[in-house]
Structures are given as C-alpha cells and as structure tokens.
Length: 137
Image 1 (cartoon, helix red, strand yellow):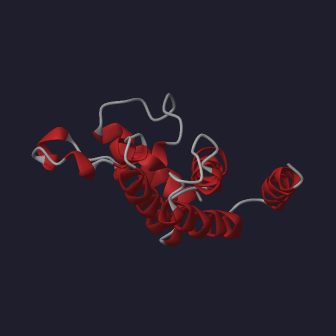
Image 2: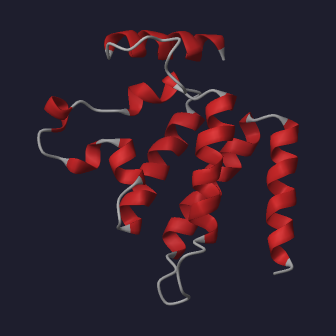
C-alpha cells in the first residue's frame, strides 16, 4: 500500500494539488486531462461513473476493476469509494425490472469480488451483512 500511496502522491503533485490535502490520491492516475482526451468524454473514469447511460457506468467500473487487479488502488479507496459503486451497480435500486441492466450488475459483481480480496475482513463482513439484510426485503 505504501508504494501505491507514493505513486498517488506523485500524481497529486503533477496535478498541482497538495498530496496531503487530497483524498484517495491513488485515483488520480485514472484521470485524463482535457488535452489527452481530445473530445473523448469516455476517457475519464469519473465521467464514465457519473454518466446517465449504464454501459458508460459499466466502463468506469471496468476501469476501477482493472486498477484494483493491478494493485493500483489502496484498500482504503477500495473500501470507501469502489465498493459502494459496485453495490450500487449490483442493486440498481432506482430502476424497474424493465430497465435493470444485467451487464452493469455483472461488472459490479466482478469488481466487488476484487474489492473483497483486497480490503479488511471487517469491511467484507460489513458488506455481507448489508447485502444479506436486503435479502429479506
């Protein structure tokens, strides 16, 4: 985790921010500058995660999944940022049965599984308790 944190601090310095002031600085390498995108709105992980279309949100989760598999994200980022995004993709609570996107849910499950491999046991247990509590509803 310390090597990943150092890499995040270096990326934070390159973006002009104070490394101590940034929260989850390990996500900075996943951002693309406006010049690098050249009009491609799909290049930025946050643009994808916040997009209205679910296939674009799935693309953002796939980027986070790849970063997690490569060990680029700290357990803190996985537990506080990525894990809730995955659970939202799996549950899709604001959608009806007709608009539920199984591909989006599938990438959410894969990403959540990768998160669970890399976070603390307490974080895993908390996620299982929350999800099992929803089974009764």
